[in-house]
Image (cartoon, rainbow over all chains, first blue to last red; front, side, top):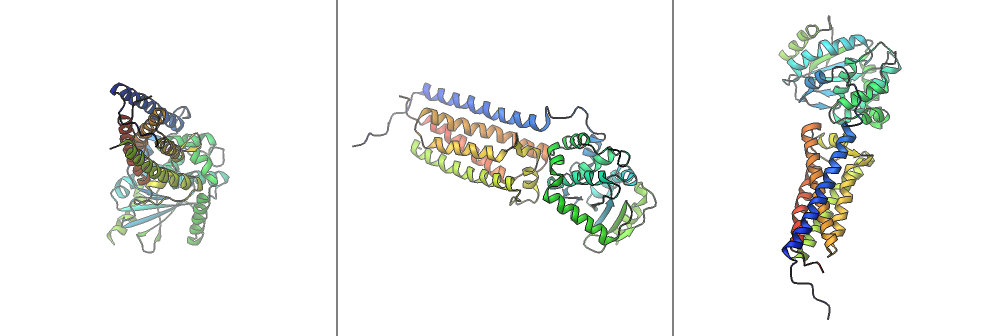
Length: 244
Length: 138
């Protein structure tokens, strides 16, 4: 006959002691893991200087849905496609001057969705910058990186698209991190997005940047002549499309 | 509930949690999209800077924790009971931080992670209940 299982429960003191040991060990281990993760993502690895415009860009994009290279609700009645190069100074002007107004007045209220179609003809740094932004697209942070690139834009092919800048941008975007922006540039997803934007620009016959195409969502878009690089240059076309 | 029944409950929950963590680990390592009800949330979390700790997928850390709890559930010793409860509580504390990260930092929620959080919360209850129902140390 085998030995029967013990029937009596342990003393209250010993059980309480075991539970206390478990609480102490568990809380310590869980807290250590959380602290390690917090430090590894934003603590000691954080660069000394944040990129220019980090707070402004974060505030501008806060709460607006992003899907890959799209900004704004997919149910928005009007779609605006922007063909631009991260190194192009006029694209930078538009991003810094017109975009915040367009986002505030049209994208945030759900009237317009903007789709960015990246180009990289200014020089090798255009492709590096575009790849860095596309690397953030999988996390729906493309626009955060793109706008920070425009905020920190330097002279074409002067070396401004440095690893230091890209790291600081990656670390400045909540939930992104430098590793994604640096290591993700050659991923299969980025290659696909880059090929798709190249094909779209070629198919549309875009020759200069920034170029805009606008129309009702789901219907054929038409190129828009933008007379100025502030919001007033494109607002009449958007208003007309909204009234259609 | 007897200790034997609690052991079985803990084992089942730990295997369920290991299944979720294992799926997320494989999806992370192979860069496979995660099946998610609300589009984008799981992908955003899975590809965020918070998805790895020192190069190790966070889901793999969860998988190791669940396996430890599963193994500890089979042994009727005080170190095993304490190890199971401590691992479950550590998982819950870490999970609470990850919920904060999803909601407050990444602004995206992964349903698989939330399902794992529910499992680990149930494991905390079961493992500590097991300690309270255990036999006296000999």
